[in-house]
Image (tube, rainbow, N blue to C red):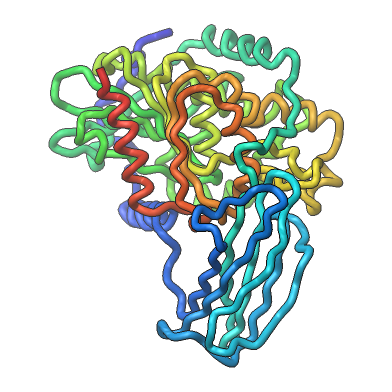
Length: 444
């Protein structure tokens, strides 16, 4: 592997990142990492167990409170439905609110999984929605995706192919992003198939050796901003994209690609394990670590990987593929047990086999391919400590699918549940993750 200094351009970039794009990205980041905005009508759905968890066969009840101007709403119509998450409800009804809480007998699940209660209220022509989700024997949820006999051999061969390709790192200083204490570079690395992987690395200026964090992205096509805050605290951070395109272009470029050439990229070549879109992505994460560990400022021992959603999946996958990773942090991982729908329960994002997509994706070739890429089969091989966090109300990455992967991890694991969260996090949740990772990276 060549050193990071293969090619360094200290001159300002020819395409400086637009200021208005920076503002947009900052706002987008805040939305992703914070609680959803308040609404006029607040619907609070509460399971009758404080921890939202039940034994299989045990009855669950939900209490519903609907507020307007912090008082109970009356006279409006409310609809509710109950059923296994992401599947058709087995109970539906409606009522007129009388200014008091009301209860819903949700029944039970006879096997491990999640039961969801969704309440919708119409007020002055607008509909509002609230939900809560009860878990049943969640520690007993088992994966449905199959483990290929040659899973390990397949990925060992892929990593061997990658190791034969020079890193060919190109670093371009981003003066407008640098601070008094941190240098920031746009980075391009050689990946498999004559492709490249791009990202932004932030390196403390003070002479010394530092731990490093690889930050892997959620789904989508967009630009990225550096993580300077951690670099200011003495950590090298590398924020990457996955699509083989620079991460500092005008926002319109990503919008066009997301709606055009890269629309539903997660389905590309899904019928061929060697050509599937995510093969280049997974190996690109390993290549990003090749770069990080070659930096002269790296301390040689302390490397972490973290992300949420698709990034939560990539965190687990990278830690499984790369023995240099010391610890991982994963928020609500996607791509977990995607075949769950074929066994009559929720499957993970991107929901290849739900009722809307099953007819197209339920083929022998695609089922064979996806087994090499599902987080479940990487989770089996995790050997480093991990911090995991999600909520029961996640409708993008169903908790059933996440537990299917989590329950297979035999390494040290720390699950922080923020029960009412969906596909978002509280600031306190982010702080816990960051503190844990920093603690692991500085542990003697």
